[in-house]
Length: 125
Image (cartoon, rainbow, N blue to C red):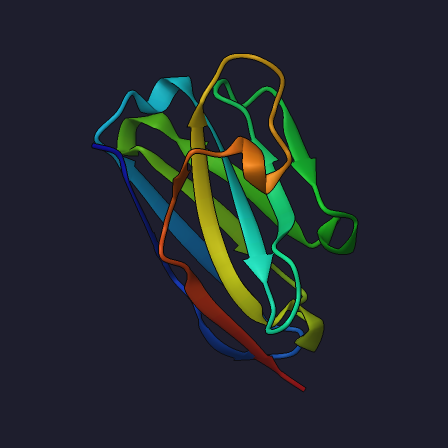
């Protein structure tokens, strides 16, 4: 059974940084494409960043390009999201997702099979 567990959320001031961590266990991590999504109250779940199984391809949402970086450590079955220059509008619950695929990098929430419980990120102005 695949489990996805996020950590690293918290409260920071605007302009600050956070690093989110996602550990995927119970499957073959090297075959997974993984992604971070976020959802603010009353809004839809949106892609933040995604990285394919080989780390050769990444994709970022327009609002985070140049500020956030997704990476992965296959030896640790872990995906990271480094978030810099944080803004109040980055406030949301951040979810990690995974899917076993070696096809093109999925970018829609409906493409992912495994999800974590989410971690709250709050940015104060």
